[in-house]
Image 1 (spheres, rainbow, N blue to C red):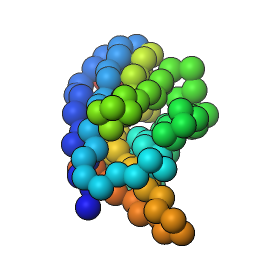
Image 2 (cartoon, rainbow, N blue to C red; image 1 turned 90 degrees about the vertical axis):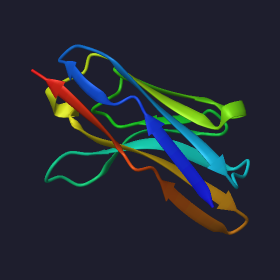
Image 3 (cartoon, rainbow, N blue to C red; image 1 turned 180 degrees about the vertical axis):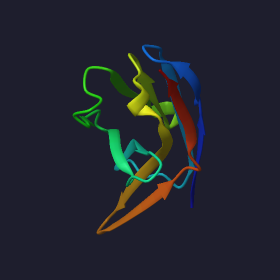
Length: 119
């Protein structure tokens, strides 16, 4: 089993910055991807950014150039630095880890942290 603990959400003015953290613990293999998804009210959950254990990153077009995802492998922790925040970034942000074990894949989600950007 894997547990994810998120922190760092809050209220910020447009143009401001926030940093989200997600610490994973439990049975984590070397092959995994950690990422941040977000869900605004009335909308589907969408990928914001993800990073593989190799360091390969992937960003949604809407956050490229503003958000930076990074990780500390020793701590199994992923960070999302969010700069130049816009009101449309307002959403619940969820940490996710996808773990690969042989032919199986398992996804685990955090509880979510709210990010609100005031105009």
